[in-house]
Image (cartoon, rainbow, N blue to C red):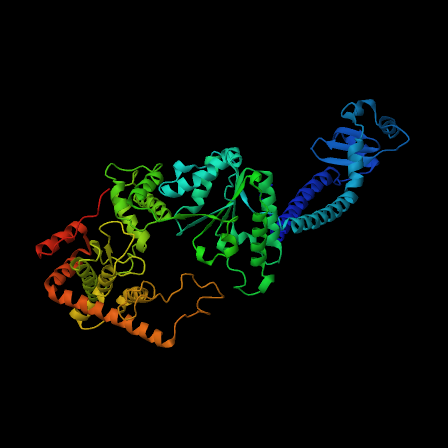
Length: 626
């Protein structure tokens, strides 16, 4: 059994209490029913019965042993007793009842039921005893269940997808893009399908495959596709599920997981977010007794224990490979590493096709345009985009998703939903319009900045307005010229406020944060500062210690830190001067864009290009088509 679900004791106890109350109610109703059978009726003496018979008011008499049930003509029912030594008729004749009077009512002799007699006698005593016995039985069962939970606490929590599960099984055709990663993993699929071919050649298939990539790039999906292609069981567990409060539980779960996987071989064990347990040992608190380190040690031991004939492959996923313990990455463990990049325009189009299969689209939908407008989107972002488009269409009571729905979804995924309740005053709207006009104008004039596709002062997320810029073509390398121009674009809104209003607002706060981070990265990460030189001051590895903010290791002196701060300031000041120069030179164009935003709130790409053309600003190339 791959998954053991432990029922919380509190929840189980609550269920038992409810069951007890229900049974008490049933017993109470049953007892009431039975006691109704024996409830007391009005009893009359035998002499009174004789008088009633003589008066002709008796309709029938039922004899059950010595008990008499008398039904009167009026419908009233009473009971009485007869002598045990003689029959009823004989007794009545002795009391002077004639044959004529006896013929006026009916006799019915009924033998008493033995079961009813016994129930009437025993039930009042048995019910309390049964309730007490049942209560002790439930208590004993609860104790037994708790002890079983204690023994199963160290069992594996992995979910398993078997090849016969058609609903959960996926293959490579369900995963768009990542072509190189698929080709790399086909070797794993071939080994699982036909291991003899490799073993006969003396080849050793990798025991561990590490999938590395940004969040949302499809690491888990690709691992499931490998199992689906190979037709083997897929054991899926998160790294955090190994770690518990009690020391040794994680290691026990690791042993149990690998034991189950070996019995199901050939199989794939997939550990998602392995950095939760696979970080550098000795870097945290607790020393060698740290539960996370104990779990990691057990994973290392289990992977070392694999033999080629066992046909169990461990796959893991992480977006922080830099923090993993070196012992995990050595040959014989996770020695096959597959990198998953963000999808390019072609891959984005294929991903959109997959996520649009079950969604009704209008004829105007062109997924290629959506792919062009979503550079930097991961597969998860694109799935979310298609889902948001469907939600928008359904909200407006339409049966199909239009291109406009998908365009709006891009902005919603990037910036957040429209804040229709966040209404700007006339003065605030004017400031926001000039702020966004400043960004868009600087971006359109500087040669290395990205072209503008949309400008809006409609509030989205935390932003009062936004300028949507998209690159001319897919980029993998960025130049210093591009960063310098983008710094000026970031400060375009800040400069516009100062030029037009002679004052500044808090609207430029995010721009300043972003620009400062870029400027510092140019100096400390990319070596693009002429003054500091080709030196990287930020380590390749992220901080793996107690906390990034609590402990930061600097590999440079205070003097160098001062020089870095001066150079950051220099980059920022030069960007501000460049943005100011552009805006002052094209002040009339700035006013035109801002006035159009005040009037319409949103300017799309075609209309924006017309404004630029009217002022003889050379347009940048269209986005490259594939």
